[in-house]
Image (tube, rainbow, N blue to C red):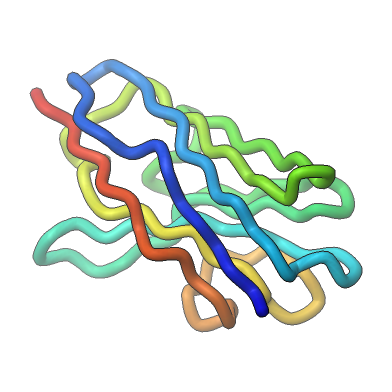
Length: 125
């Protein structure tokens, strides 16, 4: 059974930083990828970042590229998204996802088979 657990959200002031973690179990067969998505109230869900377990390659969404870092700990099956220079538009519920076919780099929601429950990030201006 695949399970994804997102944590680390909270309230932070604009310009601050947060570290989100996604613990994944059941994704240990071959290469896999873990991605982060977010959704703000009244807005469409968007891809934030993706990282692969094999080569540690990363893919970024346009809205966050250049401001964040993503790491994966294969031993712990945990992906960490470090977000810096946070803006009010970063507010939303953040979800981690896993289980896309072939462990490819993608930030398309439909490419993933499993999702965590979401963690809330609120950036105050």
